[in-house]
Image (cartoon, rainbow, N blue to C red; front, side, top):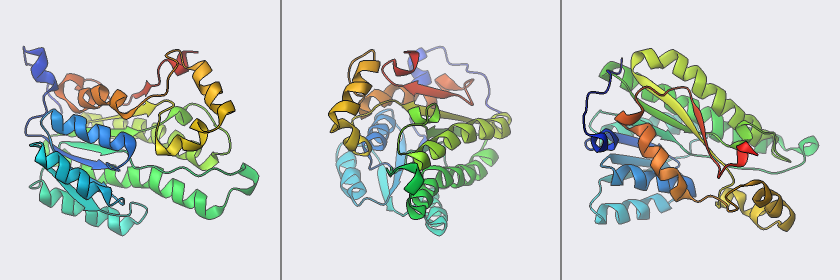
Length: 262
């Protein structure tokens, strides 16, 4: 069980000095921003991603004085999920305080002709990998007194979207999975929360950004009148990873420029 906060210095509640983190999908636009936030707050981190950019990212962050490791893995492969996690734990000296699940892909087709392979790939990476990394993390965190898990949901955790049935199903699943795991693990010291980014300027949304009609529809509903960027997730990522959020679990928090309020 996580003990009540006793620190009297509010700034200390947000520090992640000596914390150990694994970030799945840390080479993506949003994942990289979260990596930067966590290491800037003091955490040591392992990035797991299929994109070879993780090695350059790792080198750059280490040059800045942070402690970051990179593991290349295909998280749609359950064997690679297990091996990458085991390697990450070894790099972190057997300790894990924070897990971030930010790996995700998108496939767009009309629902009536949505290909089986694209369905399988999206569900495997967006939902199944999230569960299996959470499960592996819990089996390290529980004996050590707890930890923090942050999953990445989406506006499609609340809406159905258009031509993205697999993505909507996966992100709806991430939202419900987050709540289910919180119910199982909060009493064992693990907080499980999700961040639901709104319309973000990332590679996943290039098709929408380049579509003048869909782009205008999105901006017209966003009260802030702009697409989000990775940096918009940094503060919430540190908060949910830190002692400051010890009594928060099972939540799905939108970062959407006010989109859901319209």
